[in-house]
Image 1: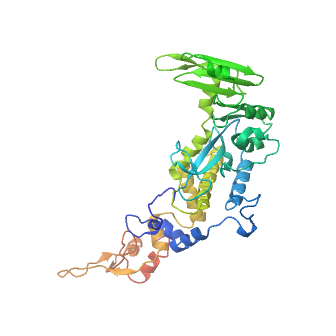
Image 2: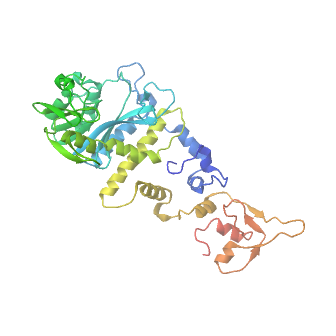
Image 3: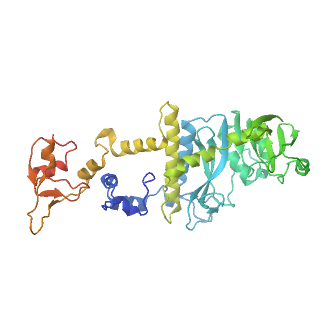
Length: 410
């Protein structure tokens, strides 16, 4: 449904020629699909902690799904050196205590996810569903003064400790304490910084610079940089030295700090992931937030599987990959050719009709399609009004064979 979007759920099973798509009715009836969607569930409610107790989990509805995907994503693929952490938003406008408003996102309202993604492919190695400002993360080895944003990054990156990764984050997560702690775990960090953050050198904030100039301060493993482009840019890094790179523009060549250049180049892993998912997300109005999140997580798993598929040397787009997955799920082993007319005539209910005539002309006759495939010429007054192309069919054996045999003329 993310590939073929319609305004109403029932339109997927409509027999109106404008909306007719026989694949859906061939897979299952509309009543069965609505029943499965209504009772779709992922956890055992009686075993969850009651609301109000300290161990109560706001995400208990989809906690098994979250834990399953996080485990599988980490086990099946090891990301490359450059990774990034950023947030995504699952569109949801219903009533929900931890619904977020992010004006910079296209959806604006919804459930917020923090993702750890590989920059090169957008593979999601781990994700965290935000439960609101009152959420508490109890993490081993993580100091309380890192704050909620720092603890979120720590939780996402902790499986990659002592492996030499380079992490890129934006100014929402960048802080001196977080970068120092991650450096001790052999995770180099780079990100834009807010000069008002605790520990950031105020001497850089008060320094006035002309366009193209920079100022930098080092303290042990950390480098703080202020660079003046169209506006002041502040960077904090435990990866880079105070070096620059020449960038050719239309009318001039500028000296850009290497930390700024690498950040612009390597920060977009989460944006790449969102960009690949956006054309195929199914946005359907529902009051059950966990159902919408579950559909999103399944699509996220689909993209991760596409990345793994591409790593084996296969070529093709994400769209083509999804089409092949769908065809193999609906038609395992090529049991039925995925042709719309074949699907329609084999799986739907069909009744014969008589070709209508006029007051001056008797009912006309047409060539039977089944007989024509067998090399026999036979005319008939009957046709199937339920098939999209209304084929003429002799009443009896030809009508039955047309709606039961995959290959006609056999």
